[in-house]
Length: 271
Image (cartoon, rainbow, N blue to C red; front, top):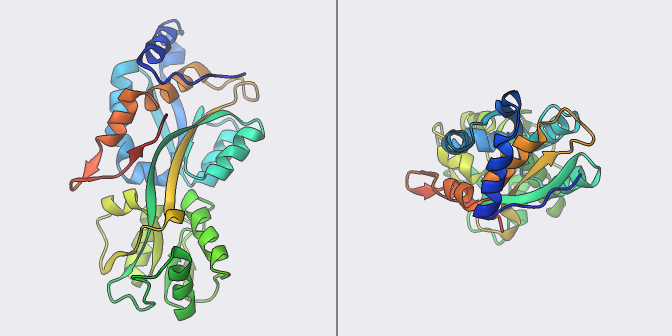
């Protein structure tokens, strides 16, 4: 089963016409398996009421690490996945679990740590050298350790730095971004975090952004309809309407309008 993108106003109107033809029960809600960063940052609380007001479709979010969210989609326990690990997303589609991946938005990852920066990563020439310096100093580091998009990005950085992190300085929390930042704050440790969650995080303690700006810290998000040919119970029509909306001018404007303290957390990227 294939779908073409309906990013134009005409396409979204067509989607609403399709919605009107659905049985009432099919319009009630869809389940979106997404990342903890989209939930913890407050983005969904901002945009989903707009979507429901326009379409009448409620979105129920299952907030997990990206790996877990994709596994939820593989089992057919979600209608849509909205995650941030491009290679894993492309494999999800290639393996027949998803219909098509669409770019939605991006932000970036940052390395945060104690203000006195014991590993001296501020001003490092690259993210790999920054994270390598943390390992070299055996400075405390809090990792999500949960197969999330952030954890995948972190593991890629360690690999680029030719480091296999282990030992008492390296703490895997096995939890979401918010709890991992809480752990980092309590330990006065370094951590890799998406900027959106960081901007919304209140319990910073001595932590601050110490390294940012390397192109390898680019953090794109994609959205995929779970394949109804593999899981016939998937609410495909309403799920596709959600994808059409979030990649339309209306949805992209909603994403761009979400700010905290005057800072924009996510940047639209749908073509």
